[in-house]
Image (cartoon, rainbow, N blue to C red):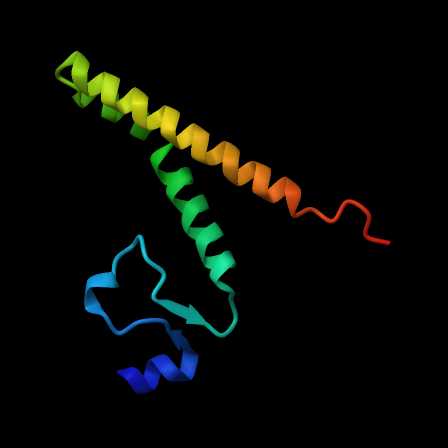
Length: 97
């Protein structure tokens, strides 16, 4: 299996505890780490912030405490998104000539 990995990209670690959806452990030759992180972030946001998912989460909340925790998570995510957007803006080449 490791021969296949070497053919298609770079394995960053062989520590199995790091293999999860939250850690980049393999980078294909055709992509950068930043591209993978951006794709992960965008797919997570597009899936979990569909109106259907938001309403499902709120409907399952049986106590006000769960609604409060969900709201706190939303605030934390919005803060994270604002940092990501600011980083993207800073990286724009405003004067390409």
